[in-house]
Image 1 (cartoon, rainbow, N blue to C red):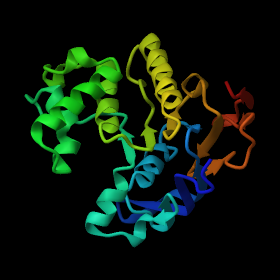
Image 2: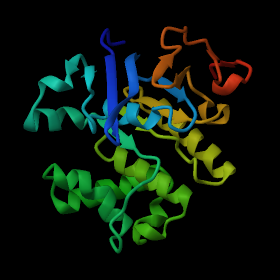
Image 3: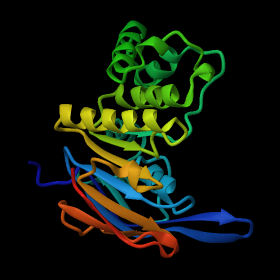
Length: 250
């Protein structure tokens, strides 16, 4: 096993503007993710989960602290060096944005085309990624016609097409039917089990969304708790006064 985490957040803070004020969204987040690991982050709406993943994915720059990929701080990288490093991260947003009228296959191939890969190679790889997540039948569909479960699978294919080492999935399947959400969570666990290099972080609003995680952390008002808990179990202090629950690793 590597002695360096594939992803590390070191004292990461983030602020967003609300009118004339700056509000704290993340507060001194410290977190390490190791190859092959599955980590779930549990938190209610507006707890900072999406912001945390976006900062970890290099989409947002943190207001303070550092994000490291394989020990290299993203803040030290510029231009093509930063772009190359970020190919190791796949991000699956909660709501996948599409260009209307374009087929799914084109969307999934886009990251490879942006990397300068030949068109036919990019399309072949995109089709492989769609088949891998059970969405091969969606390849020729206009992206705006996908149902919520299909949209999540296609967004996952787009995140996987570069063969990343870190996969960040924001509340996967939250807008899909419960049985489809369960199937998507099983798919994510299978993908991680099939590739020992791949590490997975999922966010969730409820305990059902963290099934199969080796570690379960909680995010409340920008504070991440449980990052130092052993992998065998995590205690979940639910916001709003609900009783804590213990979620064993599966």
